Each structure stands twice: as structure tokens, then as C-alpha cells.
Length: 115
View 1 (tube, rainbow, N blue to C red):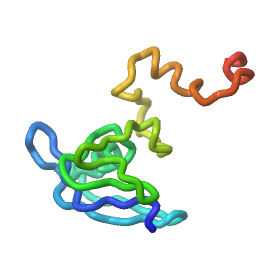
View 2 (cartoon, rainbow, N blue to C red):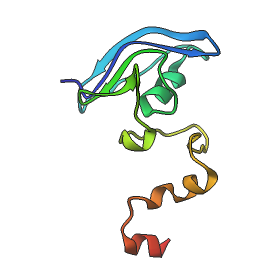
View 3 (cartoon, rainbow, N blue to C red):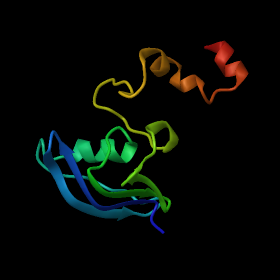
View 4 (cartoon, rainbow, N blue to C red):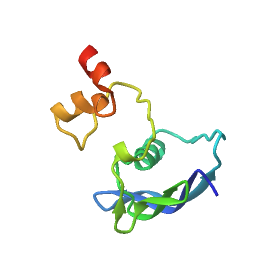
């Protein structure tokens, strides 16, 4: 079973498809790379995998579990996926207060008090 699997995904903004029919698999422990010119959809694909954007068609599976697809969109904080941005960024689906407190959700009491 693949750790990450994209199955025939389409991604669109305002009705314009920016990615069409993309499929690939990554096994646990493997390294993948998305290459292409500026504006071809690399970052959009990564944002979909992380859960920041929904797919327009197709499916994204993590460890065999559907996280994005028809009728299913698991929020980013439940996917256990990290993403390093080129510049600082906030979770677009959270409020300012929720972004600030995000790291504290899983901290124990001592860690929360230290912060």
C-alpha cells in the first residue's frame, strides 16, 4: 500500500483547470519531487495534499485512507502532513486566534504553561 497516492486529480480555480488528471504514488520513506515551470501547479498540488485546497476531481489517499475526494475533505490539522512555506503563512481556514493557538492543541500542560 502506498503512503501517499493521488488518483486522477484535477485542480481548478474559478472554473479554470490548473492541473488535469495527475496520478502518482509515494511509498513510505521514499522521496518525491515536483518539477515544472512557474505557474504549472506544483504548489497547488502540495496545498491539496496538505489539505489547504480541495481537489476538483479525483482522490488523495494517505495510508489507504481517503482524505480528499468526492464528498470528503479532511482538514489539514487532521492529516499529519507538514509543509514548509517559502515565506511565513497562516492556516487560511483558521481565525487569527486559532492560528496562534494551533501549536498548543497537542501540547501537555507543562508545555502550555511554559509558552
